[in-house]
Length: 281
Image (cartoon, rainbow, N blue to C red; front, side, top):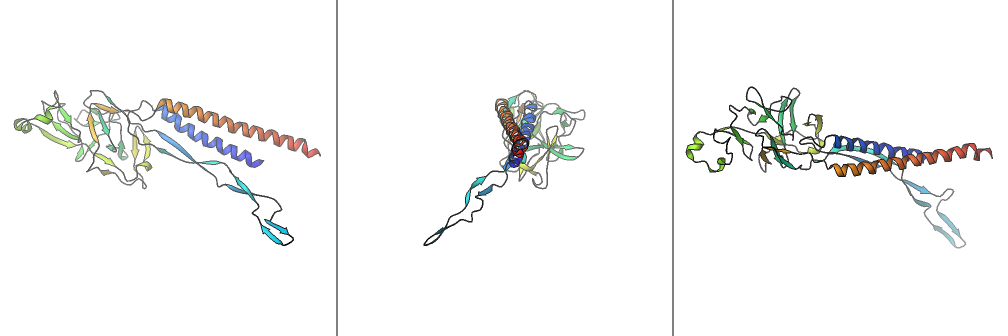
């Protein structure tokens, strides 16, 4: 009977971890580039139930017959395994802000912070006083040749992530496709936005402010050379959190938690009756 208390308690703890992940997802549903977390649990090893005082041998007048005394299996509860990030693509929303960038596909923008290079999917950038492309926190966005520095406000970033500087492009970015030789003579390729990926992206570590940090398991960041994700200027990637689905999951967690509470309450009442009533006899 005590086993039932531990089994129900382990179920309550597992639901607490699920609730933490769901609550964090709902709190960041409007954060650009946010990726939802999910909690995973695993079952404890199952126990084999066998009959007492039974060695599995039946005696007959003409010999004996072997019969397994195993009745079946008994679950012993659940334990929290891990929480990990689901890197599904979020929807793209148009902002018409030339400093906003969005990635359509796998990969991350590289940002130089005080703690070293960090990675983000939040392309809500601004232009700093020195012409540097910065995050909202003031960290420079990295190009393949260093921090991206724009000499003028009239710049365009194409879908390959190349940063072009030309006065005519600011008014009509589509001219990049149909420019003639004279136009190209006045166009400067500033840099290419540094877009990186990892061997095991699931093992990146969240660090707040929409940043991820690499780990020993995820591997080091590598610039994507082939099959690069498309870079969209004037767009932002929304979070991949479905608020309706998260609310439904939260209701499910609450009901599972309450069911385990009732199991503990029932076991407590049975133990009380066993000790205070049955023990008298």
